Image (cartoon, rainbow, N blue to C red; front, side, top):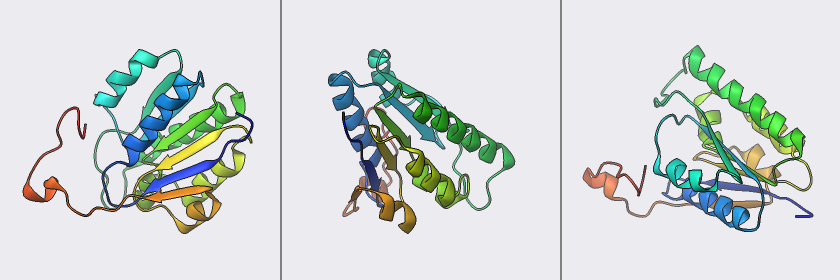
Length: 172
């Protein structure tokens, strides 16, 4: 890949992480190495189980404690997100990955786990030949401004509103 771009998937609809995982699989199919950093998440998600089949090309690390953050985050939550940022900086500078995905990074900024300045710094550190993808609701205007592609996933209708819980293989 000669030129990498910055992609942002945001909005209140379902499918942002799914879009990024699809890009990771497509990239792996082309022989690219992919690093996925999941903010906020911790635990067993079906996409991680599936991506283990591509372990030679796709690496997934979680930088969350698996609890939803409302209000002010706990110091432990912030520390875990900081570890994620430091890992991402090392990955970007290593030159070993052609695609880096920051899953739920926008939400991490909204919740105060990382700052918008942190995300902008990652975007600015991105090597020219690396594709960088940020997902999550509430992408900051400064992140959107620096992106080359922005897709807003809009919720029209969702069965969660009728009490349907997250289902294994579909939402988790």
